[in-house]
Length: 453
Ligand code: PLP
Image (cartoon, rainbow, N blue to C red):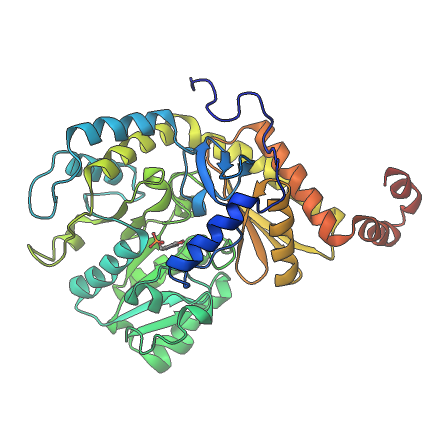
């Protein structure tokens, strides 16, 4: 039972009371841009100061409906009371003691919980870091160490983070590499998603570039995130598993964005019944506290010994407390809610696609990992901006897509509101009347639709 609303008790959500960005937001953006690194890829000028569930209040007192969730991080909604209580209790007891050098009780407890929910059978062990990219780095080091092989294969369209190893695996946008070469050597990029793409391994990689016996790992997002919320064909992940088994290659599932219940299962890879050798989690697993987790079959992690890898902050007790509270909430109904609300969303978005066939080119996803592809990058950006203007927060991804990744606590009414505002935003970009008439003319139902419009 959630306590009475802190920020939207007597106001609807969204509720926009200033022009956007508002005066205080504009002043803040100017202040920010004086002091912060220009590398930060800001999507639009929302300046949040408070959050509760899916509601975010900005610095000007506007209320937004948050369908971006801090880049798919706030899995349990903003400041869920159980997560807040867990953080407060832990902070009052012990804020930090490095688990790398000493024995912190909550650290192995968290490792055991994450191992328990990981989609692998057999004995598992866990390493905790502070972020997604850190555990991707850990996975690269571990895969090379455990197999004594040099090469790692990632996919075109992949996003694995910004540090050197991770950004070398990343291949969603060339600008992420611009100016940073030479990147980590020993990395190949394979085509993603179709079963026929798997032929690339035998026909290109193993035949022309590197023997299979020298490939340490294949790292894959079971559903690509930043690359555009791309769902692979059935059989693709099973095919990768077969290739790995045949050649002694480790399969690493990067579930940093797709995991923690977002797709209606704890891990997206479970939709295809595939077990990875190494699983990576971050983002939603701790509801916004900084935690990354690497789970591996025990015999893989047991290849390395003391000193091979560690971190001052990794598995910080407050992040661990948040993760334990989060996992309890996910298993206590939020994953099921992701499935139900995801179906509601896909039905609404399919309708949108029928209404705007030339603008909305594809609608895809599983659970609450939803991608809407537009005909051009400009249109995706314009829809994102229109939605923001109307109080709905969504986020672009891929070349010309917009993603919806709301908290798993999203209600039926919140989903309906988001779908309505999103449709209004698309209509504003499309010039609704013209689109509908064009579609209706094509379908031979002009009179009916004319009346409806
Ligand atoms: N892997 C995936 C699939 C991601 O989506 C991201 C971030 O968006 C990362 C890795 C990097 O995570 P972080 O930003 O926590 O370093």
